Length: 414
Image (cartoon, rainbow, N blue to C red; front, top):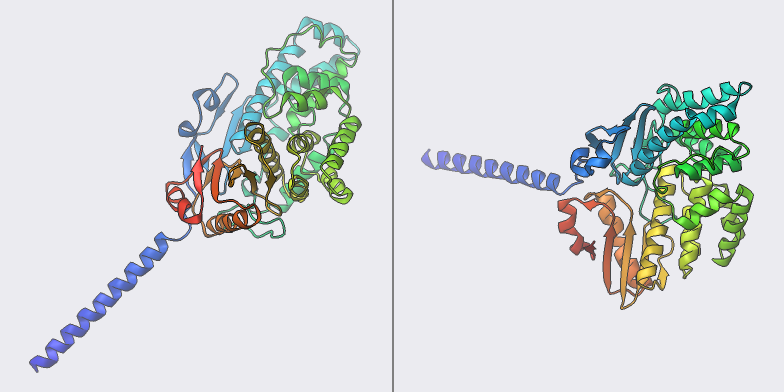
């Protein structure tokens, strides 16, 4: 009887211990799973000037479902969404440009040039930049689902961190805007875009309409030479690219891009696909091609092919910024070649070193991300002959991923 009770107690203890071990195992597996998307604060991410300026304010709550922070910017012209810090800088710059155009429309020289017969055009231009309703309110709708995959071009798998190919309807709207961005952009619009330091082929509908309104009044360029606009240099565009898109008509810019792609030995079919990809504005295409052309090593033509399959505006911008990081790195340290068939741009450097150039805001530990990094490490060693692998990230990696990076074959560098 006593023996039976002891056996029963032992059995219960073993069962309890087994349950504890199972629970612990489940807990550990949960701990090792994908990191959840963080919710960060703009006040901790941005400088005071970016957070709030004379014409804008950024909402403090910042979601980061994928690789990019999702910012909401409020202004007199409406609410704008920006996916990523670089896009945020552009949006803020555009808001400042809108205020500058508003001030121009009120000057005596503008009102005199407008005259009685076209005074409504002048009012229309002013109305565009002061009315917070309309298209500005919805600009960026659905952008939260836009992301970018870091793996092979030949795989379009959705990253489990939330970086999908994008929402079909929103993508279509963005693509249409990019496709139409060249239409109607005349020399007067380009002149005023340069005056306020913005992309003349902008997909921002509020800024676009304001430029059109001012340009209609100033088709002869008489106002532009008489008005000083205190706007800093354009955000996200080198002076050489800026001089092209501001001074030359779209057809001339296209011909320059086509020649540069031929210099890179990009197949004609790929060049046509890139030129016809509506997720790139003409300016974005020019930035991408100019950066690759400045480096022109083995793999640059292949990266143009990778960029040609971009499916949304945020992904296109990722390719542009990756190529510009490559150009900057090449100016400091000679790049010999870049990894083929890869969205993440990995460049071979002297001394058996390779560097992954990633213009991303935030990278966390997910099965998809760690899998891609592990695969990239193996490919960089085999295909680029690299023995040392660095990651240059414009943003930050989560603390957990930072700890895991060495085991994946990489080291994080500034």
